[in-house]
Structure formats: structure tokens, C-alpha cells
Image (cartoon, rainbow, N blue to C red; front, side):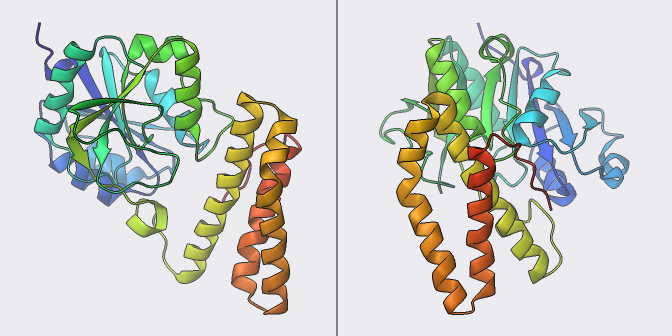
Length: 286
């Protein structure tokens, strides 16, 4: 049996990303259905794309990437859905067709993803490129295909996580339920992040610095939360001892050097860690 395009919905998570979203959609024919989740209240996005027959737009408050995917799931009517960050490069109809063919060969899965020509961070290890399909522990949340029923059985994404490691957490919970994640190496994409790619629009160097501090805060909050959740708090604290020593050293060093920009970065990192240790929410925003 061959799957066709009306059995899959492409979900784009947008935060001040109107131009990237428009460019992404242009790469596809009108037979591909899109669901855009915008969490920046960008009414111009709806004005410019809302009239397209194959595009549906929903707005929500910004509660994080995983939360936006869970929100999107409520409106999915197809058997499968493919989530993308709009700064992903190269997907088109042919790219989607590769996955539709592989679904039938693979059978049951937690998530499928492409091969990344550049890897966004070290936790995303890739499968052997010599294999057409490879099993892997986690696929980057910036490009993940789900079976709706399996997604529901795993429980979607952990909405306590605002940013970073939501895909790692999903992979760990999927594995505990006996599901596997696969990388389709014949489908290739590239991905940059945040201020580097324009996926979050910023206007000046001050805004860029704020965005980078936001990233570093959430990175360490989410990393400690992940370890605490899947192991235990004591083990997580032991693992983080060298990390905290480095942070404190950097704060002292940049205080002496009067480098306030770098000092602020590590103060943000320390604060994110302390919030996570205390069980406080991942509440930092721009």
C-alpha cells in the first residue's frame, strides 16, 4: 500500500518568523497541507498566508517549542504529521515523498527524521551515513515526523521544558515504551538556530545579546531538568559539579577582566541552573 500526501500534515512553529515561513511554504506544491502555529501574535502572517487553501494558522501564547507541538496535535486530522522549524533548509515535495515511502518499510516508530548536514548541538548524534535508514536515540526537534497514535501513546512533549532537550526527553520516554527512532539518511537538511538564522527576528546587537543569554539560561535549565527527571537529583548534581565549577570560575575571571558581556552570559547560566535545581519553572523570557 502506498501512502499519499493527504495522509500527512506539515506543522511549522513560528515565532516572529513570517518571512522564513513564507519561503518554506514556497518550496512545496499546493497538495501539501500546512498547519502553522504562531506564538508571537503575528497578525501579518495570517493576513499574508491565511487565504491559501492548503494553509491553516493557529495562534497561542509562547509556552515553548514542545508545548506548541502539543497544541498543533489537537488540530491534526491526518495519520501523520511532520514538524519543522521554519529555518530548516531543503525540504520540498520530493523530501516528503521519501518519508512516505519509508514509513511503510519501517512500520512502528516513535519518530522519523532526516540527516542533518550540520548538527546543532552535540546531543544529536547521527546514524551511519552508509545506511539508508539508521536507528538513533534522538532526532532534532527541528524536523521530526510522527504517527499521531504513537505520539499520543508516548504522551507528546514535556511542557515543563520551554527550550532545548525536549526532543531528547521524548526519545527517552519513547524508548521506555518500546518505540524506536529512525534517521532517513537519504533525506538531507541543514539547520541553524535563533539569532544566527533569523528564525527569531532581532533588530540590534543589544537584542542579539539578550537572545543569546536566553538560550544559555534555558540550555542549562533544561539539561539539569532532563538529568533529574530520568535519573535522580543527587546524580544530576554530581554530574553538574564540574560544570558549575567552570561557571563560577568564568564569572570570577570576567569580573576581574571587567568583561561585562561575558560575565552576564555566565551569570545567566548560573541562574538557569539554580532555577532548575530548586524546581522552579523555566520562566525566563525576552
